[in-house]
Image 1: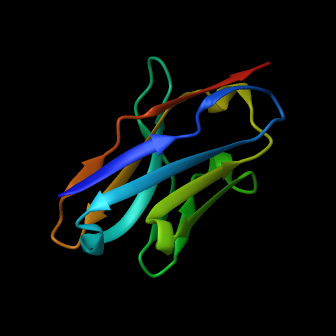
Image 2: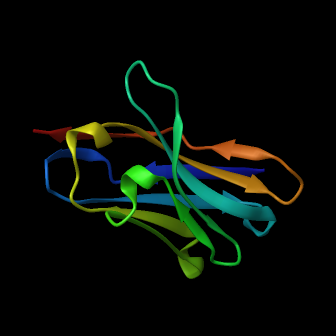
Length: 116
């Protein structure tokens, strides 16, 4: 089992920045990849970015050049640095990881609100 706890959400004006953190505990050595998803009101949850255990990253087109996913292995934490935020970035951001055995784990989510 893996437990994920997100933090760092909040209210920010358009053009501002936030950094989200996802701290993992439990069987962290089973983690294959960790990603950030977001869900806006009335919309489906969508993948924002992910990072694999080998360090490969991928981003949604809508956040390329503005968001950066990274990790600190010593702290078992994955970060999402979000710059040049737009109102359309508003939503609940969830951390997700999948394991080598195919299990998926989710955090509880953190709210990000970008005002215009």
